[in-house]
Image (cartoon, rainbow, N blue to C red):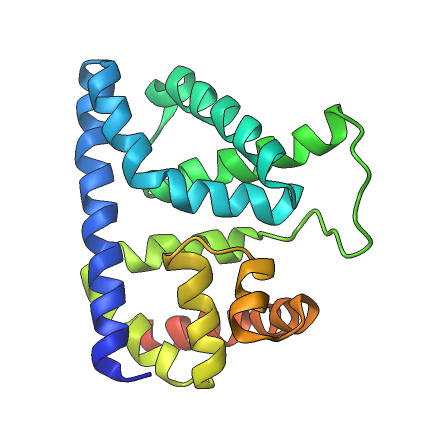
Length: 197
């Protein structure tokens, strides 16, 4: 995977983030279903990916996703731009609601299920991409990862694919993908922190 491809994907994601931020500000000023529908279209793939990673079942994830958007609609006025990007804020709501969904419905928990399957550290990656200067630093830091690990991060965070989807595409066990992502996140975090010094 080339630096050009890395820049292309991060720029594409940056534009999507920017659009969501613009429409969310509009929503906070004037709550309209038309604006909310645009936000839904821009964010549904990523939020569905967050939920599916926890619930594992597409039909349950669809139900949960609808509940998440109802929650986002009702909580839109409580969003604070200085704390996180809109996408990160919505992803946290999706993650937390999916975990509550598992507990509330007393769903059988998979052997490999972890309540921290999507950590704050991983969600913060979304905020990093949202900043143009950090965008460049992130591209450099991603280049330090093995190409297959970088590819998995793109498929997961920028294209909204679940670990199971990625496992099928790459013909690698989901457990291996989880391990790679878990190991890559601290490396990325350290690289980003070092670049600020």
